[in-house]
Length: 244
Image (cartoon, rainbow, N blue to C red; front, top):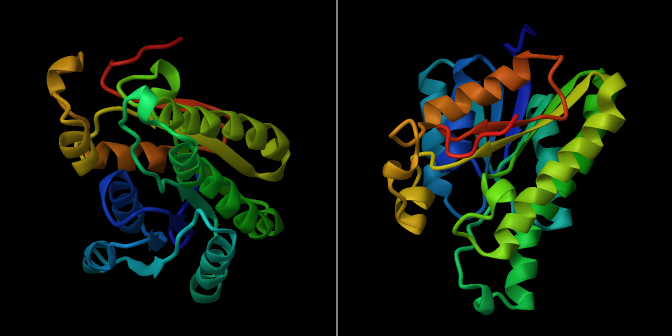
């Protein structure tokens, strides 16, 4: 397993939910963590405080990563504060729970831009530093919706499926550079989005409970530490969707 203490990590959309769980796990593992947020400054600062209270190092940085200039500025800020980014988690995203007929072109483009285009923009800006170092980890947060469609509208499922395709493409091209690229496809992790936005029930899950933020964080840590896993989608869903 790779030694990750001191590594520089950027987690987008890390003020709450799965991003928060991953940022906390990284910080407790000794990584220096940039906690990106768009509008929840107090929540992001609380994540930073929790990491620092556990003996780690972190800072909160606001950026709308769906916008090219802001994504590039975010990466430059992280590099100025901590050095080149070693670990990137593309987690920023918004939920799209609408009736199919209610998804117009503007709504389609909004969700695709936040969920998919942002990952491309931040990856593109972060890659030069990883390539120079000859080591890096990129983790894209997909969803069970990419595999099953689920209760979400088509633009959300399409955005999350696009992340899987992007993962495969980058993983293949970067395999000999020391950079691995993987996706995590969670379902029904206990977050505000799941319990509030979706109003989901754990009765649907074969294991019989929601997943935890700690389990999401441990999954991301596994992908950071392991240098032989690349181009994979890790299903974190309690058996809700099973694949070979």
